[in-house]
Image (cartoon, rainbow, N blue to C red; front, side, top):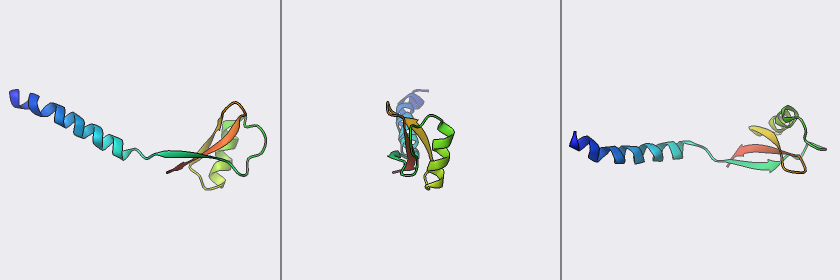
Length: 71
């Protein structure tokens, strides 16, 4: 029982490191093809996918279409 208490923190730290490295970072860039204010998420997402990105979202006060990609 005592030996399992010694190894538990090490196992938790190792698990957290594996999870952190498995998640890919995402970067955002403004869509070059989307024009006007971005009001409908699905439209932005579709345009970004046609530009070769993973997807897109309407962002910010000016409602711009921002496309997502892996960094």
